[in-house]
Image (cartoon, rainbow, N blue to C red):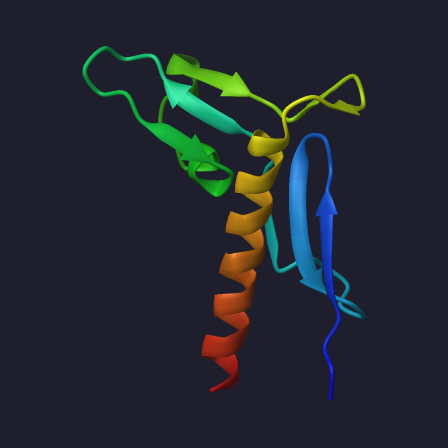
Length: 95
């Protein structure tokens, strides 16, 4: 039986799930962030931003500004990460 995957690339959040389900299986911040700490520079993508202890030290990059896509590379990272996490969780649970 084929399964339809739904991916919603919103301006603030990216959500992924399966058609017919009430809630998405994966929801994360749609963007990337880089730590401003000298010597500990690290890039965070999607759900990694949500788990950061001190978000005040992050420099954010969003793919959408005022409803227009301005940075495609920033859009691909969170979408890929969220859909991959959802896909792996689905297959691990169905084994």
